[in-house]
Image 1 (cartoon, rainbow, N blue to C red):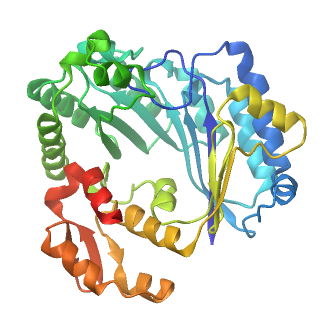
Image 2: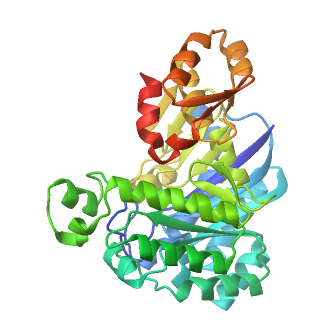
Length: 385
């Protein structure tokens, strides 16, 4: 068994209008104290877990690390290096994939070189769009030319594994601008792509405005659901033609470059999260740290485990996760394994889902129907009923 580690950095330069994450704009004077708190949590995690009634993950080599947020590329190199050193001191280190999320405008020659030297070997670029009008409407700080410039800087620093994010459904996005964003993104030629459909909820400024029928944040210039589905399907076509393998609903990769860390989530493998709002899973329990950075840091200083949520999964909940997470992967799930592991018979349920056109089967494998990928959330709701 191997282990994944996630580090949450909740700091941003600005809050995107569509963002529903527990991140925010804070004084840079808080960055180093926060990084120190993460290091302390890592160093004492076994004692803290046991004191909170959580069974630590059995000894395992760490083979993926993902530092996300927020905008972790805002942290000083010394703080990021200190976090990686704390991980090496506390866990058996197997090498592998070490990812840093970075916004294009934060990447400089000196920063990229420092990241490579301290052990990062994969960068995830939050591009979102190659259209300045869309980036401005979304509250992003970078502009279209910052993205290829950032990729060139990372390449010069030795990064041979770059992921690039795009969002289908941004305000002011049209079929023509989406096509151009795909053109420009493919010119960058990252090893990995993530394409996310815009999701609106009341936890984001744009979501609240759109749901209330308002006009701020270009809420009335959002593409409709049919347009977003068309954008997604066009991305599927373009990326396939360019040689990218579609391996998860929102993710594509060149051969050999699938996100090894994110695969742990979808395969229900153990991972530990450190930092404000970070989530963890040991195989039988899930827990999360408090989202507020001040509350998180205070708990760490007091020597306790900063846990806000703790849940012991029932067999039924675990089975639901097998469905939901497994069917996000285009290879689907192994029905024979699940039936044996959970001592259930699912043949009747699968037959009904297949007749409804929601899933496809190939021997013992079950996968989401290809024409349902763009509306996967609606399908998952039906699957869980």
